[in-house]
Length: 153
Length: 274
Image (cartoon, rainbow over all chains, first blue to last red; front, side, top):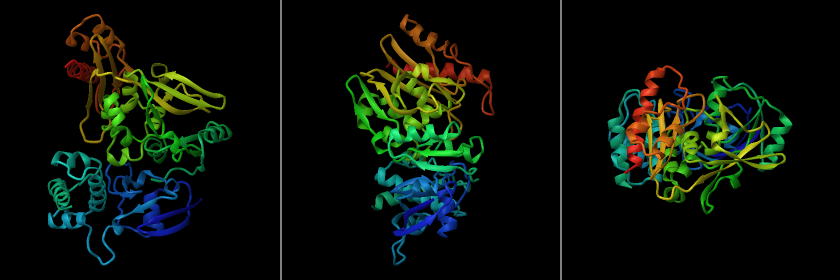
């Protein structure tokens, strides 16, 4: 089936099988491998990206369902000149990653969270990120980074 | 994990969706947000030959004050139920329960109608709307009909919807200031409830719905009867599992589920009685 999506500002026309998952589409068709596949069961959040500005788990969305949408992946977060998104900068400054596998999904979920709740409490950040697992259990610094990014906005 | 191959058709209206599902037969399934169906398809627990995508029916996404009840379009996403000011004022129990579904990413996609039509007894919204005495509106080739929530859930993942009917609206009576509580017991964030309780109370009137206490969401009518005849919260809560048929699984034995139901119903009624 023919779909048209805008990914990180670029329009893509693609012919996809209906069963193609969005995460496979962005990774394998578009080559945007920053979006990771973790559990593949909509639990871990590693595959989170923005669909029309909101974080979703791309392992649980069909590419055909995303037809006509505007998608942002981790590759689309930094500015064109390479300046990091404030959330990426906050993750770096707060050492909010260990192995880094969950990081793209964490950044996408965290930015979506701050759009809905620009000044969250620590508890609200923890609840807001409940859909993202860090198997290094590095949650403390991740939460600090999100609070720092919220404070800096 | 990639689902087995299927054909995909997109509905342009509710009428179109019903005509497509009729045309493609019993192996066809509606897909809205897909957050119940796609995980099952990836595990091959569901293998529809055709998906009828109703996810773009924007006119079925709404929350409206309809006098004595709030009318919620079936395609309304959990996030929109959770953050609705209309529901916060008139049916706060439902808005709160929606905030416990999955996680934010799931709530950005999953819909209230999808959750109810999927009819997983471990899901939060079927039992919550059951406790609230909701009415569901089903549309078929010959028009619409009302189905009381109490008549809707027939068995394990089975509802009284006909194969060519679509759930289009959920009508939830206004709570009119009743006390309420939502108790969800699980071991990990974002998990399904091992046992959950949705309850409201206004004087001797009450409604108690149980999550994951049987093959269907359960209306704990024995508890409500005890409350209406003046029983204490503690005594009424002892009847928590009287209408349930809990099963054992990896998380809990039958005995543990019964115990949890009694404790959680007591807590829920205490909170609702404040």
